[in-house]
Image (cartoon, rainbow, N blue to C red; front, side, top):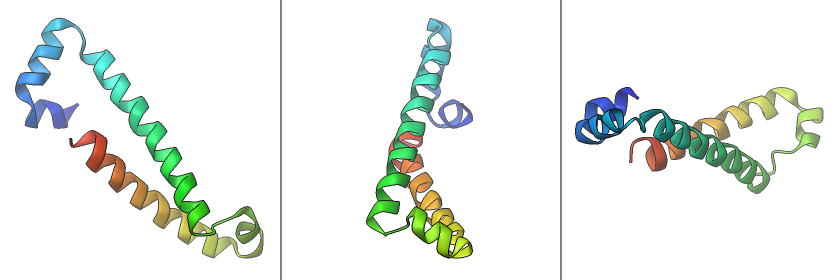
Length: 83
């Protein structure tokens, strides 16, 4: 909410005064969450980060999944949150 309040003041004011702010924020949150989980799954599949890797080498799996989650979060922030 702080981002829209700081960078899109007119949109924020319009949504707030019309009573649609909470619905708008919930919709954005749902879109961002769906996109994040979809991206994590797609990137992990593309890069071969599997349950077998998790069983064989947990530390490598954790490191690679953390990297994938960070990249997915960057994409979501760029495409949905800050757009």
